[in-house]
Each structure stands twice: as C-alpha cells, then as structure tokens.
Length: 235
Image 1 (spheres, rainbow, N blue to C red):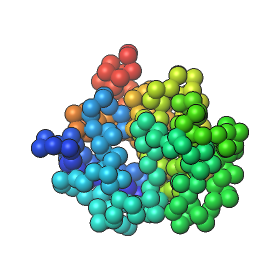
Image 2: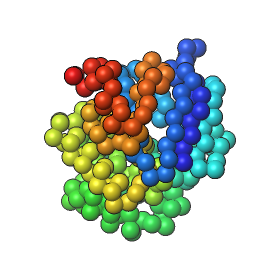
Image 3: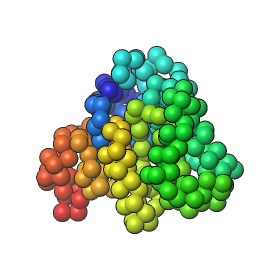
Image 4: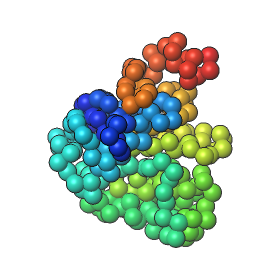
C-alpha cells in the first residue's frame, strides 16, 4: 500500500532523514521506533506533504504521492494524527470530528463512521458538545484519533499517541487502537517511543536512529534482538 524508497529530507542543509525506506502492506500494523530526534516525525511530515523531500520516492497504492498536492493526500485515504494531538480547541468535539470528514469518503460514510467512532471511543459521545480545548490530554488524543477515522482512511498514521499521557491512559489508547484495527482491518502506521507496546502490537517494525533505518523485522524478531532489548526495553 505504502512504499517509501530512499527518502532524504530535512529543515536545513543537513538532512534529518538519510535514505530511509519503509513498506506498509494493506491491513498491516507497522511501528517505527527510535530515540528523540531520530527523524520519526519528519518521516510522517514527508509522507503527508508538509515537508518536501530532497531525494527518493513515495508511492501510495497506485499513486506517485510526491506528485499529489498535500491537501489532496487525505482524499487518497491517508489520515495523519499528528504529534501533540493538535485538536481545534475552540471547536466542539463534534465539530473537530466534522473537520476530519471533509474527504469525499468521509462525507459519504459520515453516519456510519460517527457511530463506530462513538462505539470505539464512547467518551467522545459524552463530550460531543464540549469544547475540545477543555478536555483532558487523553480525551484530546481520542478526538484526534476520531478526527482521523472520520475521513474514512485506508491508512491511519499515528505520531506518538501516548505523548504526555499517564501510563494508564496511554494503555487505554493502545487497547482502543488494537480494537479498531481488529474490527475494521484498518492499516496503521505508528510512530511511538513506548517501544514495548509499539513492538507488541506490530506485524512489522523499523528502528530509526539518526535519520537511518538500522533494524527492521517482525515484532517477535526485534523483541528478541539483544540490541533492542538493551537499548529500548531495559533488559
């Protein structure tokens, strides 16, 4: 579904990403882990079109993604849930979800999507008329996920969904993502610093360090790798 080949990108003369390649097959849960500053968020921004790469190619389904304007990429089925949630604080929960439903598929499937979002994340139904800026961090993260789901995505990209959340709330968010994937078959690409959880749930994972992919494999293989166990799992 998604093919990133040899991408180099950054914000200055020195690239943050240096020849990064990843692949995500339809229906997979793929995790990208690594330390702060490794380039994980930069990779997501490049896929979404916020950042233009200096080299490499990105294909989504049959499309050359670099030939597609950033504002058109959600219409292909890519939903990006950004780092830090970035909800619209002065809009209600329902209005935030409606913002996500501006794609053609999102408008077509609005009623069915809303029903599923409220079933998966019932607190959003309870808070539907509340301003998003007054919610807790965990509730805002649920709004951001719901907003992404409202677009009827084929690929849901989640950037650090546990950031700034209490461990119990982060665990709940991960549980919800697994349930969403189980029920819908949605393809998920996750960037996450909670490496144990990111590897536990993934079909395939990549380790990104200093702008390069240094390891990749199944979650079982990476969890058994001594480098991962020592550097990321505290073993």
